[in-house]
Structure formats: structure tokens, C-alpha cells
Image (cartoon, rainbow, N blue to C red; front, side):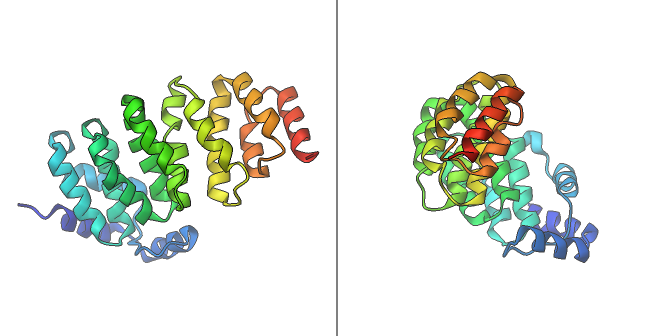
Length: 238
């Protein structure tokens, strides 16, 4: 049996640069070890080393666990790429693994892909079963878990799904001081505003006095100018 995690790491070490490793570690403020490979290089290595199309559920989970065991950013990114590429075989029973990966990531560079592309696919496919779990995540003490509960709705919303689940989770978080929560709320509202500006404006209007500047700047980006101006004025007059 090939040692795929070791083969992936060896390949990435051969093309990585110490300069990039230092810059990424500093930029992401992460405790993980960085080899210095780009996301594109990680994707390419995964594609070359792993026969993704023939990777069944159990082998996928085993490989993800082996890759994520070591505190190396590129190994964990490779695990995330695999989950993204094979999200169709994942189910509710895999949520504990995804939750562990989110908790151990401690950086948006891993959490956001897990939330938007992996959890988002699960929510879009089975919202009735995933919603209670994402509601639980929304009240977790770990802000990365809370961020993931918000961003998990981005993919379904982009596809025309309901805003209700996201709005219900976002409302209690509006006054949080954590930047990554404020940004996540604004990000989803911004994307929703592209196709449903009236719905976004109606929700933000009575809450503008509670939202942060980061949230508001993102939320109004694609709203009609008159609505954007009115909401920003309400925020400033709070």
C-alpha cells in the first residue's frame, strides 16, 4: 500500500519555498508548520497522487485522518481538497470529523473551504438533518465553529435556497466583537444581496444599529444605492 500522505508531503516539500512558508505563517498567524507550497500546487499534487474518482467513502475518511494528524498546513489543506472533491460521498455521520478539522484549523484558510464547500454541500443536499447540527455550532464557544455555521449556508443561498437559517444564526452574533464573525455575516449578506437585495435590506434595516462597520460595508455592497445609503446612515446614527 502506497503511503499517500508521505508521498504528497514529499512532493510538496520538493516544490515549496521557505520564503513563502515564512510569509504564509506570518500572514495567517498560525501555529501550524508551513512547507511553503501554494494552494494550486496542493491541488495539483492531490490530483497527481490520488485517484480521486475511485476513492470510496472509507478510504477517503482514512486518508483525511492520516493527512490531518500532522500539524502541517499543506497536509491539512490536502485533506480539505479531498473532502471538497468527494463531498458527494459524505453524510451526517462524517460531521464529527469535519467539526474536529474546523476546531484544529484555527485559520480561515482551512475553515472557510470546510464550511463553504464541504459543509455547504451537505447542507444543500440534506438541510433537514444538517440544520440542527449547524444550529448547535452557532452557539459554540469556539468562534471558528460559529463562523463555519454561518458560512455553511453560503452555497445553498447562492443556489437560491432560503436565507432563514442563516439569518436566525446571524442575529444573535451581530454584536460580537470577533472580526471573523463580523466578516462572515457581512460576506453572506453581500452574496445574498446580489439576487435578493430587498430581502437583505429589510432584514438589515431594524438591526443596523447593532451591526459592526465590517458587517455593514459588506452587506450593502450590492444593494440599490438608495438602500445602501439609508442603511449606512442608520448605522452611523446609532
